[in-house]
Length: 93
Image: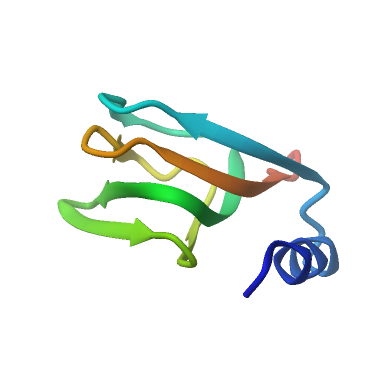
């Protein structure tokens, strides 16, 4: 999937906030959450996400999704990572 197709899919799925993020070699973040749902396409490097004790590495061309408020760890220490990401805010209750 190319970036244009990915962005079209994000927009069709109501991901209004779309941006590019880069994390340098050495980047790692301990367990945390985000107040938004995220879907990302890896464009450079790789990142490992650990959710519920299960680690998955995403490489160039891979897409990952992460529901809002999901506790996770991020690790791109070996190569750094760049990705195009869509964010969908949680609906207020």
